[in-house]
Length: 366
Image (cartoon, rainbow, N blue to C red; front, side, top):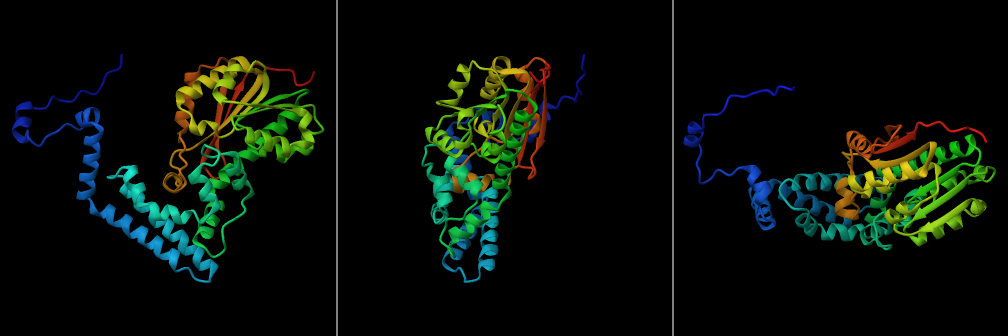
């Protein structure tokens, strides 16, 4: 029996005498029962009471617009000034979030967002040309790291900053980690079978395909985007006989998989899925599609991502951040028999790398 700390009961008579009933409202009641309209009005009222946040955002926006019209011929100076105004803008947005709705803040950033569109990268992230955030062409843009904006434009410096940032590097890092896992599995086993869920353009496989060509690995590539699979097929021409491509809704496809694999890679997909959906996916593929001794590898953006504000307000790119404890809870809720999980961060510290291992042993050869 666990004993809770007991606090003395408050003197209700004294409390009632000290509180003005006309102004006292329990915060819990407001949170649970307020209508959307009431909450919006409360946010507007709070903003009026806190002009500091409003003024900071207005000042940051003005400085951003001013820089767009007053760039110099000195590239280093322009780069540093661009970094400065972005940091001021994001700091002002962070403060504004305390009292303003996201819709209200976005409505005030129209000109800022339009200037971002000087960069083809930001046009992609704002418009979702393939119908979803983080499509394979955007990921190819990230991996290649080539700045396609007009030189000496503010868009050029914005794109330069983002393409050289840790939030972009974390994606390159996890692709390399996936490539290493696949290579290890292909070299340590006879006839290894590998499944890549949400493969995109298969940048991980492209890094190692010269070695994979000399192995007897078989790889199944899943993606909802037919264009992504077409890109994979084109880029993986040297190992095309080792690859099977399947297109369709990822969640529905996962439920239909019957084959068993030695390694299942899920790169970045969980950044967009709820805990409940992830638990369902892990249960299915672990219990029905993983060989004894097999491994499931997945990634997830970590909480505290310092680029969240920039991504959400200027990119239109939202990710579901998770803590280590959150990922461990998902693992425990999945109740995977005879399994263990290892979790660590990749080199930038922005993304978790998680590996679930089936501890039933498999023969290394034969």
